[in-house]
Image (tube, rainbow, N blue to C red; front, side):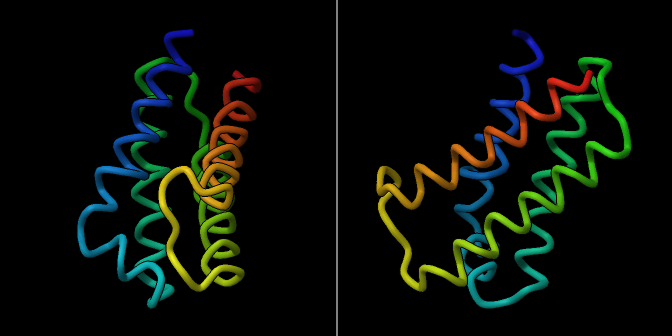
Amino acid sequence: MFSFLLLLLGHIFADFFLQLTRLGAYKRKKILALTAHALIWALILSLALIITGSFSPWKLYFLFFTHFAIDWLKIRLFKATFPILNPVNVLDQLLHLATILVVLAHA
């Protein structure tokens, strides 16, 4: 349970608070910004995995590529931004949480 909570906190920090910066706006326009966002997110979650003793390099790659793919698809399929509780954003967050659960299931 501690591992999940730590990863959830890392997710919230990286996917919400860090998006308050210009990176959040640029990721919709520039592939490099989206890449940076996904990498920062994956690195923060990897730090949480290191703290809990369940880090593995494949998890870093998996988290990066899945986060990038989910956000890229959301940006390409939906040109507008939505309020936080919009079904598009809820699905986005559920998919990110699913990737976290996959990583935790392979401890």
